[in-house]
Image (tube, rainbow, N blue to C red; front, top):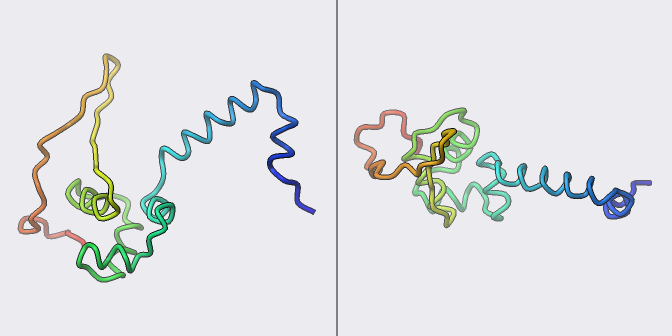
Length: 112
């Protein structure tokens, strides 16, 4: 019989629980596109309709190893979010702005 996670967690030391909480937050802060869509309880079909593309295009987007920033922005905005791009340096972080808007005319790889 499976053990309940809460029972295991209750047996952990305070320090160990704190470490688990930090690791959990880190994992939740970084997730693949399909997991983000799932977490928002959206289907590929719903997202495809929002973007005006076919469901298969969403599947391809989610499996793709690299994306244009404009494509990623459209994907995130269709889920109700806002894309922010940051560069992290030893001296601090900088938000990168003015990346232009997607019009599709110069993107031969555009999904959809």
